[in-house]
Picture: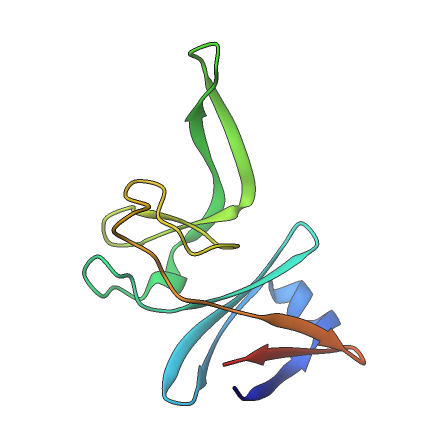
Amino acid sequence: MSRHVIGLERELREQGRRIVRLEGRSIGLFYAHGNWFAVRNKCPHQGAELCRGTVSGTLMMTSQHELAYVMDGRILRCPWHGFEFDLATGQSLAAPDRLRVRTYPVTVEDGRIVITV
């Protein structure tokens, strides 16, 4: 495993997203609601640049059979077909047993963002 310093946390936090190339892989770095996430920039469905998609929440059914907006800032939506992925786990919401995107550990060290690949 290799560690890569991406930049200063305060600058990256303001941007909210950055796509970097590490060890031949395109990886998206995201900041949302106090959390850092890093995911592979390739949708497992058909290979789209996943990290160019929108970050938001999603609608899920509650136990009372109503729709609720949940996971705000944790859902990455593929720009091609709208597949939704949990930034924290990489799991697809539509097909969690079949589709998953690779995630990478992100740490903050001395004010710098570090991704481990």
